[in-house]
Length: 148
Image (cartoon, rainbow, N blue to C red):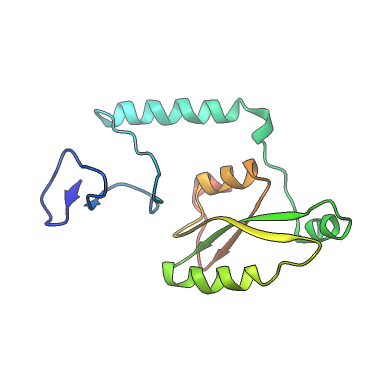
């Protein structure tokens, strides 16, 4: 971790800007970061969390096509469409968010539950599964963990 002056720091206070190395995406405000002593402990923690996720049968993703989703909306089965929005740069998110908000009808409301810049990550997929939502990406890639 480095502070705003480029000096290495070991501890930070709330609202203190720092640069973190080694993250695969930009953390959102309020995200919890866990500190471990070494890479071995980090890998063990990741493996434990992945096993916990795999043991939860309710989190098994089901493929949904846009055609299937449209049929569900037409049949009145979907009243609210939860969306996870990812874009290549932060500046693209607001115009896209505004456009998606205009798609709401009497049949279905569009609700953006998370938005961010960068690639679609495994945590985005887990959020989409948990919220029965849809991920929409603009100019982004998909990380290997998210493809599974």
